[in-house]
Length: 169
Image 1 (cartoon, rainbow, N blue to C red):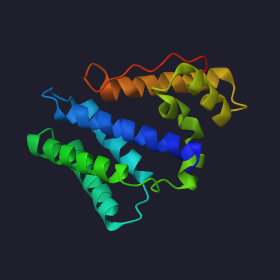
Image 2: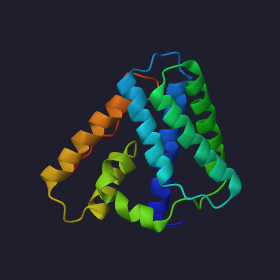
Image 3: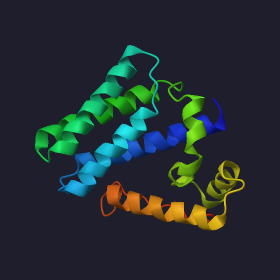
Image 4: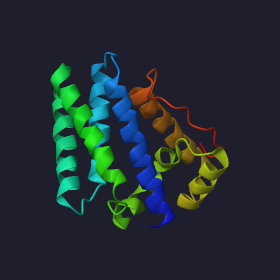
């Protein structure tokens, strides 16, 4: 597995764990957050390319659960999505071959998502590797957009973890 694979897989698992934490709380999830979370989970699982039936079923269940959760604030869709995310986390932990290189190549613009939670020095290094010729204002703007999305998804909940400060971000 390449370093890029490891980074993407760590970021997917990190956000699935955040989703699990958020869904398991007693907090009311607002409509904008609920819909953003549903979109985010579908986006995460669009990167997952299952090599076996168990992971394919987990991916299907998360997609189905996210769509139901997007449409309804009721307890049943939330519970079903929580269960699907938990199973998916277990399935992803069992293997390391579920991200294709083609997916990784498209994530250069998502560098802030990839490095969220990494030590500042490591995050800056990865940012420079993935965006070697990017102009700093554009990278900073993407960082602002990411922080907005992160706050929409996780802000003010137990799932929120601070991003480490970054020179590039």
